[in-house]
Image (tube, rainbow, N blue to C red):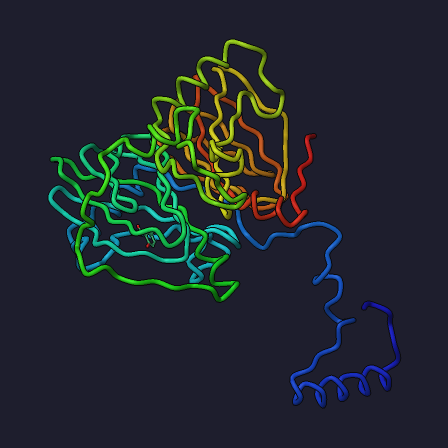
Length: 347
Ligand code: GTQ
């Protein structure tokens, strides 16, 4: 409310606000326009993390604490405008996890859903509900809500990946549960590749009837397959705003792999520049291949392999690929779409 009133009225109102304040009440008209803004005004900042410094810091963490002691040895990427809240957007968490040769990150489960994007090193695995998958660079791996998971490194190199979780969503809903397993590592009840063979080959078990919001049983989307698909379609005409962009799905339903997090893979041919685009889902991006100039609002960044950046809700983004470039990205888009809130504007 911005109308000008005389000093008497202003004083009377202020005294009234103070009186009701003692009763935990406050007037709507003083805050209405910020509660129902004409369009999103995200308090978040667009931010970029170069992998070179991420790696340096996470390796230092590797000298200071073991994976078992930490339970998860992760450095959280916090949005600079929301320090202390453990989130990269209002709804999503991101962190960089390191596992050293011979280490185990013990088995646990929680109602928060997680994704991993493997960035660096070979020889680690993630186990999800009794099945292991070997982690290779660019692989997109999920651990849906309440699935048992542990990580281990049987190789000779440190392995680093990006974690994305819906921690802020579950916190907002006060719906977080977690438990630790008695076993450090889960026993293997299915051979590696079982889920991909059963659910990820354009077939499903004959009696399988997934519920609409059920997360996918395919818990690994190998980068080799993603890159092959992108490369195959990149021979055609690019979309002006997307280049060549695919979304990851639960192959049994066509919905997002997990109900709270959507994930995408995008190919931009060398020299291609996307038209400006904005959407209501604040999005975390990772450059998996190539290099690009990234414009978010007025900011311009040079982005190289494994660099991570976040574009807040309703901020305009534009990408100019200097080489054939692949971006992985994730956001809360399926939540917004389920609630009828998601919007985008193609400029
Ligand atoms: O790997 O289970 O970054 O539970 C944060 C919480 C990773 C995990 C995170 C977790 C995990």
